[in-house]
Amino acid sequence: MNLDQERQTIRDELETMRTQGMRRQDLSLHACKRLFFDLGIRPSMAAVRDLTQTGSASDIPKDIDHFWERIRNASRVKIGAGAIPKALEDRAGELLGALFEEAIAQAKMALDSEREEIHAQLAVADQRTRDAEIRRDAADEAIRRSEARAEAAWERVRALEAELSSATTHGNVHREGLQMTTRRLEQENEALRQRLETEQTTNAGLRDRIDALHVELRQSTEHYAQQIKDAVAEAERRVKPMLVELDSLRTMAATYQSGVRDASRKEFEFIQQLAAAKARGDRLDAQLREQSDDVDALTKEVAALRGQQGMDPAIAALLCSLVSAGRLTREELSMIGTAADGHVTLPARCPKCEEGEPELSQVDHCFELLCPECEHSSGPGESRLAAVSQFLSNNDRAAPSARPIGAVR
Image 1 (cartoon, one colour):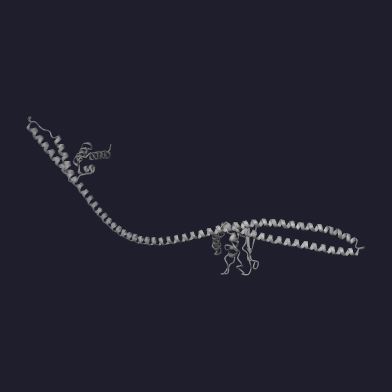
Image 2: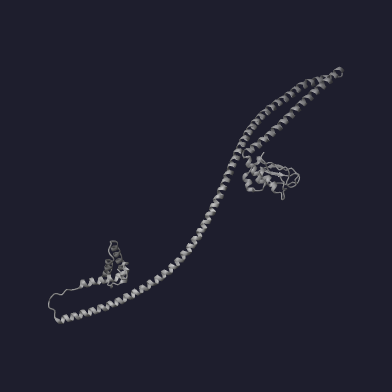
């Protein structure tokens, strides 16, 4: 075991004794014993202080002196009353005196060494004290700067608290406004929902009316077709005998002049009957075409109403206004698709020439708006909304008073 390990063992023993409640003097005596007997080192204040980590500069030398006193007491030999020769006693006295002088010299040397060591330690302690004072001054300066920064931080905190209070006040005002806006929007939403329900009820009534008109149209068509068929059959039934009779009268015209006049009269009556039957058929055909036009108009209206059922009219009006302002891109129009086409109306006039009435055409599921006057075109679009938007956006300098592109019907 080397010297460092032995010193660490001594420190562990002293720590165990300290935990057991041993006094400082006992710790110092134990350190002196281990140093002197086990390590062969003369106990000194620095060595003992290094091991015990306790005691002052005046206490440790007293403990070391007590250790030496105990060594001297243990090594002292008591001489009885036997007769000792005078020469031997003189020689023993000289030896003891020499030993005493040597001990004093060694003690002085040890004292000088310990004194130098103490002076060195005092110099180190003074240096450490000066360093500590410098560090203390630096720490005081740092504390002053920290206090200044803390004061500035407190000022900043107070300013931020004032700003927070102001922001909280503004936030409360904005929150109240937002709540009022939310309530107003909820009321408008409820009104729009009621309007939607009304429109749905109206659409249901219109669908029932259209179905009834379809049934009535089918019945009227069948009835008129049957009447036309009966009229044609009746005309054929009447014409055939008349033709036979006309042929008979013509063969008898050479001999019967009166028969010729009767045949001419009957032929005239037959022609009148044919004209009346044809006029009746024309009237029935015109009535049928008129009702067909009515049915087509109602079918278009139903298709427009069905196209408007998939979207709220208010939302459609909003989309149309955004497109009028040019705030929707092609990708956004593509995402909307044909959902709002039922609510879009065509512009009444061309924004470029302001004279032509634009016409909408649909080819291969693409819509195109074209002005017949100046041939201004929107190009193919995926929906009516996209076609109208392109038609208006393709005009480089549109009139400021141009009408909006769509409105809710």
